[in-house]
Length: 475
Ligand SMILES: Cc1cc2nc3c(=O)[nH]c(=O)nc-3n(C[C@H](O)[C@H](O)[C@H](O)COP(=O)(O)OP(=O)(O)OC[C@H]3O[C@@H](n4cnc5c(N)ncnc54)[C@H](O)[C@@H]3O)c2cc1C
Image 1: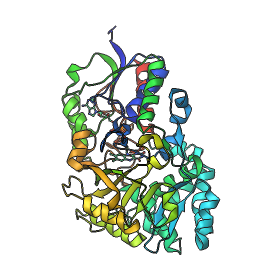
Image 2: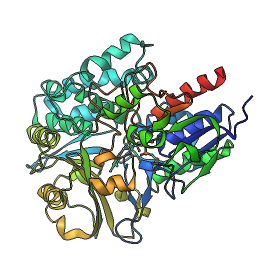
Image 3: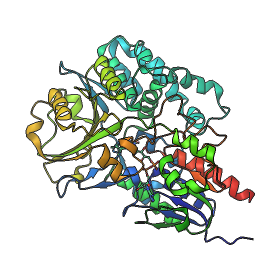
């Protein structure tokens, strides 16, 4: 009988690598988690990017999906230092007239703000909020026969539609704009099928667990996951950038928290010709251009609701956001980009020196674009917050190439590990009975390039580990 150094090795300590490592370690196996960077966390790292004393979230900032994750919720992360802060306004969406639409923790308060669209909002989001645990059990994993078909339909029927189709349910500019900002998280043109899905998930999760920021930065989610993993007996090795299977210790299973492109480079020799052909056809989506700012005070938004919001969606009307996302997908550098902002330091004051503020933001750009979007992004913010530019003390910028250099998973700046359209939602990275198994025995993918896709929630890692566990137990 073969003797292995570890039962399983996980390569990559992003949310999904950590989730996979924890799931395997919880089953009593011996696990080594390898991270290429000097610090664990992948898309959850935080550091001082702008000025000393200003902590920025390098990638993810706002965590509705982590807070509502069925897997993360089972873990004692609070005992390992994770504390979530929910701002009074989860997300605000300003308009040129100085008003703003808002997403609040309460479903009914949010609906009340929408006036004539109150009932349309309640009818759309209410049933999903009520049935979310059952819906999540069916949608946040691989495609399979649903456990709760009736509940799934409450989500599935609107989720399969385009965001523009769903927008017709609303009458007012406020509701349409708020909805467009949510759906634009899909990084797809809003007339595409399934672009409604992410908007529905984000709004419903907001009413369930909020849109929290972790006290001390997103890094604290990574640190809590790692702390729990180590407390179970798991081992972590950082500063080990894996280039070949040959350099890894022997193990019954190897799980890669990486995308198909890196899997081809590292394990290509072990994969079948057909599977390699499938991986090479995998499609990446739009990228991001990201900026962090150090400010000498809060962003002077005209709309007061924006000053109490953790997240601010800058893009104006539904039509404007639709144009921006359509042009980006067509490879065009859009004049007025849709901008996502996070104001963590308003609520987590320890992240900045006293009296100062920081701001986090990005816009979508064509995959691999080298365009500098600094002026376009700052003009958009200035439009809704006159005087913003005067508050800038320093800024740090990431274009798509810098983003990919920072983390090899962000190919061309794609933060979702591959386009999340209807064709690739559940067939990521390839059409197979299990999307987590590769064609090589004992090698698995567990990253955002497997279902249910991008975001900090750990569900791809959890499901990939479950798959690997079943295979290990059969050995
Ligand atoms: C700018 C930006 C903003 C975002 N905002 C949000 C947000 O607010 N909320 C949210 O939920 N999500 C957000 N996301 C998305 C989220 O961060 C990702 O979807 C998520 O981190 C993917 O998790 P993962 O575990 O699949 O991969 P990753 O988090 O990318 O982790 C992969 C890990 O593998 C390591 N690695 C790569 N190659 C190797 C190698 N060869 N050897 C060893 N290690 C390797 C990397 O260093 C990394 O640590 C954002 C992402 C970005 C970039």
